[in-house]
Image 1: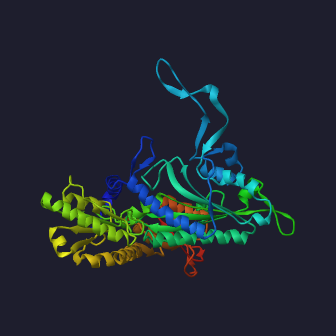
Image 2 (image 1 turned 180 degrees about the vertical axis):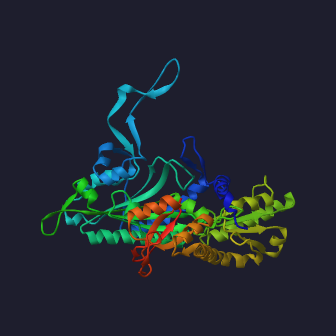
Length: 487
C-alpha cells in the first residue's frame, strides 16, 4: 500500500527513529546517527570513495575552524553563506560560583572570530597557495570527508540539519577547459552512483545564475523527485573559474615560465542522500533499502516450537548464513529468544532488509527455506542449496526493479506544460517536475518562485533544444527548464 501523502512527514520521522537510523540530539537541528544509520552511510561512502580514487583524487583533511576574514575575500561566497554561519568568539568559559551559570570568559575573546566550517573553499585555497608553484603541480585533485555546519531554520533529519556529514572535492587545474571537464566528470560520478547504488533516477543539469553555488561560475546538479512530488538536489559540482585563486593569490608558472591563476572546481554530496533513499523507496511498512547499500542484505529468522528444536534450528540457520557470507553477502541471523517471529518479521520489514529467510522445523527436515522479498512482499519456499546459489542474483534483480519502479513513478510525476495556469494547477494538486519554457530572466524566475513556491531546479543537460515561449512572460525561450517545489 502507498503512504498517504498527508501523513508523509510524520511517516518519515517515525521510520527514521523506529528503524534505528538516527534521532534528534539536544542541539536543535542536529542529529545522532545510530549504528544502523551509520552502517548505511558507510555503504554510501565506500563506493563513492573508490570512485573518487579511481579518477585520481586523494583524500586529505582541513581545519574545522576558518578565520572570519577568509570568507570576506570572495564577495559572492561570503554573501551566500552569511546567514548560515556559526561563529566562535571565545576560547574559554567561566562559571559563577554562586549561581553556577556558565558564560564566555570576557578575558578570553579571540582576536579574530572563527567560522565553523560551512564549506571549505576558503581554508583549502589558502592552503593550495603553498602547494602549487608550477604547472607540474597540476592538476591537484583533493577530497575530504568531513562535517559542516550551516545554521538551519527548518531542520529535518538527514534532509536539512544544522550539522551534517559530507564529502567535498576541491581541485586545481592549469586551464579552464580542464576544470570544466573535471566538474562535468564528477557530476557523472554522482549520477552513476545515485542511480546504480541507491536506485534513484536523476536528471543532470546546470543551475541558473540565481541558484548557483556562492562563488561559482557554473553549478551542475543532479535532481530527483521524491514520493510526495517534491524535488531534492542530490549532489552538485561547481566550476569556480579563477574566483578563489584570485582571492587567495594562487598562481602557477606555466610551461612558458609565465605566472597564471589556476582554475578551480568543488563538488559534494552529503547525508541528505539517506533522506533521498527513504523518500524514494519507502512504503507503509517502513524502509525499502536497495541491496547494494543495505547494511543487512539477508536476515534469517529461525522458528522453533520447543527448546529441544531451538538448538538444531538455530545451528542450521547459522550454517546457512555462513554459506551466504561466503558468497559475499551481508547476513544476520535473528535468533533472539526474547521476541516472537511475528515481531521479528515486522522489525526487519521496518528496517528495509531486502530478503528475509524463515527456517522452521519442517524446513530443516526438508532442507528448504521460505524466502520473502521486502519490495514486493512475495513469498516462496525453495530448497536451501538453490537459495544459496540464487540469493545474489535475487538481490541484483531487486536492485534493478527498485530503480525501474522509481523511474516509472517519476515519469508519472513529470509534466510538460505550456501554460502558466496549468503549471499552477499541477503544483497545487500534485506537485511534481514541470518541464516548461522560461525566458532566461532572473526577474521572471523570482516572480514564479514567489507566486508558486517552485524554483528552477536545473536546465537539463540532456535533450534537444526546443524553441518556445516563456510560460510567464511569453518571451522567446530556447529550451524547457525543470521547475519543482523543493525540499
